[in-house]
Length: 266
Image 1 (cartoon, one colour):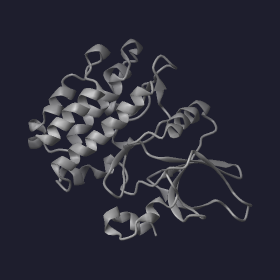
Image 2 (cartoon, rainbow, N blue to C red; image 1 turned 60 degrees about the horizontal axis):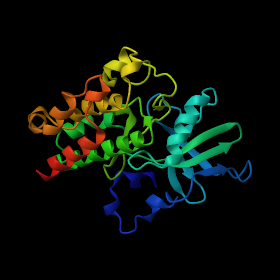
Image 3 (cartoon, rainbow, N blue to C red; image 1 turned 90 degrees about the horizontal axis):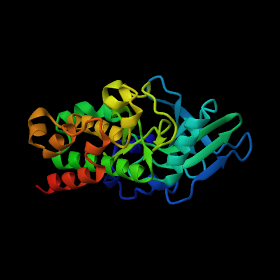
Image 4 (tube, helix red, strand yellow; image 1 turned 45 degrees about the vertical axis):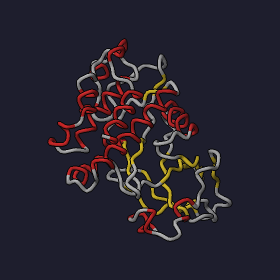
């Protein structure tokens, strides 16, 4: 059953099993019917040093991810729940939450190809076309743009927080460090320092805005292309050379979307 996620949707004459647990349903709260009849079966841990489980929804036989909810960090739960309930396209899909005995989990879509960090070598080896990579970047910046339109900042964009599905589509994940504009303080001790904006590294709260996500996005572009193609991309120059701390000089996510469409059609 899990092996089916090694292949793209088009490989199957009937691919309905990928959506047997509907993404159109509202944010659901799952409970065990009885102690002997759980709603989900925990299959095994996924990822190195992770406490996240691959799970099976026993009613629909859907493969999902069960991410433990850390009850010791109520603010992190609230941040992640906010994004989860918004159902933002190009962000990993949350089906809802699952309570079982003393354990609670977020129920997420299974992104079978892992993280962008794990896919770097294949991307650089040209196993994806230039246009496909540009569309992948477009999906990511659309996700970032929607988050920003909700008045939120992801705050931790890096290759470890971008997932790839069986159709080679990318989406954002890990929203426990999300912040609202003008909300609680930002911290510099989250995520990968390499992808953190200078204003975050220096705790310069006066210059922290949506620009911190755009800065991190600009640093992702070299992971998709070799140096020869990278030099040909106007989008790279626009983002990386304008990704500076001052928010009034930063390139906007809307502008990046336009530039990517221009690059795709070029």
